[in-house]
Length: 369
Image (cartoon, rainbow, N blue to C red; front, side):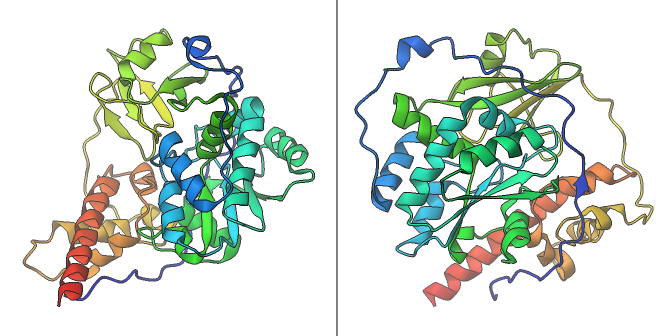
């Protein structure tokens, strides 16, 4: 079997939800901050790529964003090549997210310091800061931060899922990426703001065990707090006075997130959002009415209902359009807009994983032969 190739598609959709009507009002210090943080520790700043990689493995070894690849992986993929462009992605990854704006509002000194450190170690000539065009306070704050630095601000209408690296890099640079590939393959590095924040704060305080998490409870203003990586989600919520027992808990966004059991799930480096809501009434799926809404909303130009039909075909029959599932970026818009309540996103996610597994196996066979 030949390895699968990404089928070329034009990005046609995405939905604009507008800037959230609320804002984060405070950034509370963790309860154990004074007990664990040491003022002015003697920490040497990395001066080159290997030293930066060592520091990243200590500070944030994995991905700190739900869709942005881990920086340590991008650096390894970059090898000895120069990063021609760094993109600091400050677009909200989910419509309800205020994390990038809150980092700018409360912790901009760490955010900017981390981005500058990465740019210097990767010898990158410029850092492009991608912002939501309608978030004027964040835009004004970054205009002040960019003064005298290598930052260049670029504002965009945040049509979800604009923050996904595949769409963002194409919009900003015209570079076409496969969802399964890294932007560093094209000498572009996409930075998640939490990675920059974690680096900047570690160099200042020597603290590397927490990350900011936005908690969104239905009917209340969102809250922002630092959660300890490895801590149970339920324990973290209880420190905020929130009882998760009678509510549905969704991790990393209402559109593309996953339902979790807070008693069994731990805070990870890529835990950005925790959303709680009353249990939703189940809406049974009905037959597709051929409205085409899923096709119009898909930001990578797929036909989700066609992929759903292909997934239901017996494995012994020709796969047909199944290969197109490789191009899915798992944004969840198809299920969101479907009036028939078809389980499009989850089915395509499973189909995509299967196709990528088949491609990896074929590549191994070709290498062995």
